[in-house]
Length: 212
Image (tube, rainbow, N blue to C red; front, top):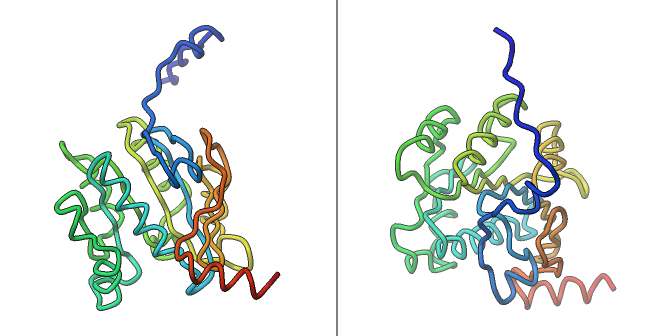
């Protein structure tokens, strides 16, 4: 059966279309602007540079706009995960944040299809998903169709995300956020924003003072 041709839109149709944005303010707005509610993002960086800490801070902020699921594929329920939750006072958001313990891709996808599933999904990390570009695209398209946000965390090789899938995701998502020296540098399709975000101000100041 031939595929159905999609509707074409005029310039006026597109200009009049209403999008729901996240009303970020303060340092979050200065850095990430006001992203679409169904934004997609990738956060990447080297070991001990602050990417997981940034993701946790972002997750906490996103809890102001809906429930957040964080699939810890790499570490799962571990002592380091526990310490990270305590460090970022994730108790303060209550049940708006849930941690998935190495939940397999297919079960995670089914979870997100359920009624009243979380508004945002964070996957840590790409290198532990074991999926193809096709499977990634299916999840991203589903999340967009439901108006949900999708965020990936990735290891780095040099200054780039590590591996073919991570590299594909980098070019496909809205927000690209490299992390270095406890500082995040947002790039991509930003609705405002663009300033760097200090994940750990004291350490980032020390790091960049030493390399300048």
